[in-house]
Length: 222
Ligand code: ADE
Image (cartoon, rainbow, N blue to C red; front, side, top):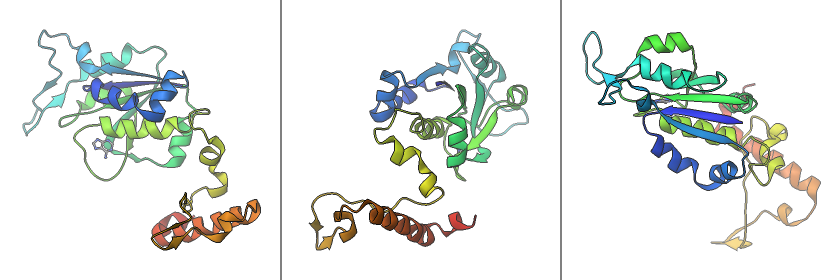
C-alpha cells in the first residue's frame, strides 16, 4: 500500500511515522509513505502558500494552485482524502475499507482552511476524526494512517487477535492482565489461569459485551 501526505509540515509527520510500529512497517516495506510539502509547489519566490480571505475576516487561506499541483504531481491519481472537521466521522468500518485501497493521498489543511475551488475540483473524500477543531489536518492524518496501517497484514505481530475482529466486531475490548498474579490486593480472574481456551473465549466475549453496555451503550444499538 502507498500513502502520500500533502502537508505544510512534512517534518512533523515524518517524526511520528518513523516511530514504533509504523516506522518498522515502513522499514519492512509493508507500507510506503511519502510526505510532500505543499510549499514546494508554489511559483512565487517567497514560497508563500496562503493569502487573506476574500470578504474579509481573520486568518489566512491556503491557495488553490499549490494544493492542486501537489496532488497532480503524484503518480497514478491516488484516492484523495481531505482531513476536515466538516467530513464524515471516521469509523473502524471506514478504516477497513480504506486499508484495501492500493494508493491513497491525504490532504492536510492548516490556518483557516483551503480555497474552496480546489476542493470542488479534486472532489476529495472528506473525513473528520471527531466533533472538535484542531489547528491543522496533520494530527488527524496521522490518526488515520495509524489506524489503516494496523490493518495491513504483517504490521502487527498478533495479527489474528487484532485484525480478525469479526468475533468481537462492534464491541469494546475485554480487560487484559499480566504479571504479577496479585497487585494491590486485586487478583487476575481465575478463568484466565485455567488454560481452558473455550471458557476463556466465552469469558472474554461476555466481558466485551458487559463493557460495551457500560461504557458505550450506543455501540450496541445495531
Ligand atoms: N482538521 C481540524 N480539525 C479536524 C478534525 N476534527 N478532523 C479532521 N480534520 C481536522
